[in-house]
Image (cartoon, rainbow, N blue to C red; front, side, top):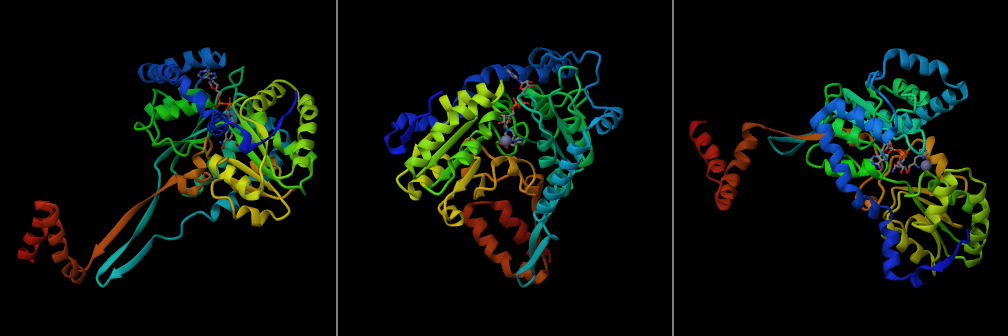
Length: 435
Ligand SMILES: NC(=O)c1ccc[n+]([C@@H]2O[C@H](COP(=O)([O-])OP(=O)(O)OC[C@H]3O[C@@H](n4cnc5c(N)ncnc54)[C@H](O)[C@@H]3O)[C@@H](O)[C@H]2O)c1
Ligand SMILES: N[C@H](CO)Cc1c[nH]c[nH+]1
Ligand SMILES: [Zn+2]
C-alpha cells in the first residue's frame, strides 16, 4: 500500500472533519441493533446473556456457570507462564505506586468563618463493574489498570465482565490479574450484553452503580444508551494515537511507533504530524514494508486504519502541529522533537503525553504506572485518564456553632425572601423564635 504525505492545510474541511471525528462516526450507525440487545437482557436476564453469547461470541454457555469458580482461578494461576506472571507482577507494582499518589488524604475540614466548619468527606462508590475487552486481543493489562485504582479507592464490590474464549474459558492472565489485584466477582460475558447485565442486573449478576473500562464500538454504544440508568464512567473507545515529529526524529522508530495503536482494530486511528518533509516522506516509505510484515488479522487492521482514520500530514511549524493535536484531542500523543518538554507546553488536549524517543506507546500501555485506560473520540478535551478519583465521590460537610448560625441566619432569610422560597426563610425565623 502507498502512503501519501499531505499538508494539513491543503486537506479539505470535510476530510479534516472525518479525521477529527474518527470512528465516532461508525458508533452512531449501530445504535438500533445495540438497543435491541439491551432490551433483551433487561427482559430475559441470564437466558438472554447465554443466547447473545452464543450468537455474538459463538460460545455455548448452556452448561457452564456465568461466574468464574475458585477452581478456575487456581487453574489459571498454575497454567500461567512464569515470565508472564513476573511481567504482570512488575506492572502491578508500578501501577500501584503511581495510583497510591491519587488516594486523597484525610477528609478536609476548615473554619470558613468563625463558628462555621466546612469540608469534604470522600467515600468509595459501593459497587463498580469493570469491562475487560476480549475480541481483537486479550487484555490482562486492562484488568489491573482498573482493579488497582478501584481497590485503592476502597470500593467494597468490584465486579468484572469479559468475553469468554471459544471453549468458554477466560484467559488465564486475565484471571491471574483479577485475583491478584482484588476483583471480587468475575463473569464470562462480554460485549453490549455484559454492559446491560451490569446496568440492569440479572438473576446471577447483581447490578452495579458505575461501569468502567474500554471496549469496542459495540460496548461504547451500549454504555451511551444506558446514560440515566447507570453511571457509564469515562468514555474509552477505540484506541488512537498521534505522533508529532520534527526534523530530528528518527523515521524508522517513528514508523514503528505509528503502527502500534493501529493494530487494535480497523476502527483505530494513527496520525503522524511532522514539521519536516524529509522525515514525513521517509516514514511514508518505511510504513508499507512494516505493515506487510505484520500477520493477519492485524495487517488488515493496519491497512484499514491508514486507508481510513490514519495518515501522515505536514505542519508549517510546531504551533500548527500543536493546534491540530488540540483540535483532535488524541488518546495517546508522542512528542518526538528536539525539545519535547517545550513542545508539550503547546498541548492542551491529550489523554496521555509521551516525551522522547524511548517511550513507544506500548511501554506506557503496560508498565510505567500511569493509567492506560484513556478518553478517546475527542473526550480528552474534558476527561482525564482513569484514576482513583473515578471510584470515589465527595460529600460536602457543614457544621455550625451557635455563633456561626447567628452570623449568617439573617443573610439567608434575606436571600430566601428574595428568591421567593417561603419555607427556606421560615425554618430560620421560627428557629430564632424558639431559641
Ligand atoms: N481507550 C482505551 O483506553 C482502550 C484501552 C484498551 C482497548 N481499547 C479499545 O477497546 C477495543 C476492544 O475491542 P475488542 O473487539 O477487542 O473487544 P470487546 O470486548 O470490546 O468487543 C468484542 C465483543 O463485542 C461483541 N460483538 C462483536 N460483534 C458484535 C456485533 N456485531 N454487535 C454487537 N456486539 C458485538 C462480542 O460480544 C465480542 O465479545 C478496541 O477498539 C481497543 O482499541 C481502548
Ligand atoms: N492501547 C490501549 C489503550 O488505548 C491499551 C493496551 C493494552 N494492551 C495493548 N494496548
Ligand atoms: Zn495498545
